[in-house]
Amino acid sequence: MTIKTVQQYLTGLAFLLSSVAFGQPGVEKISVPLTDPSRPVMLEVGLVSGGIVVKGYTGKEVIIEASMTQQDEEGEKDKKAGKMKLIPNTSLGLTAEEEDNTVNVSTGLRGISHKIDLVISVRQPAR
Image (tube, rainbow, N blue to C red; front, top):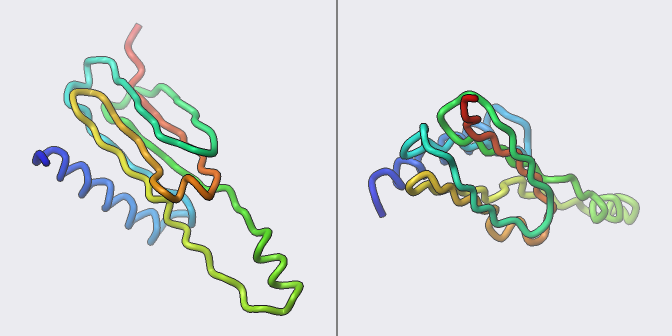
């Protein structure tokens, strides 16, 4: 594992913790610095269920925002039956790695059982 990869993991962890502490529940945001922001970016996204929106912007990093669609069917059933309600785990397991301007984004095992929507902002080339 390279120093740059470790730095990216730490950056992602910092954004994850800040989104949990100060942001909306169920929303994670990661900023990924690029090896060479002047070159085009290649995205590789692993997502089982959900949607992907890619937007251009003037920054030099790739910004990934993930949100989970609320699925409260089981909670409603439990409420009607008078049972205790399970408190959901809102962590999305969002990870991102960058190597030579290729950004690999994954939602991990959480994306298998839940619909996760991604909004990815990438550097828009000057015209």
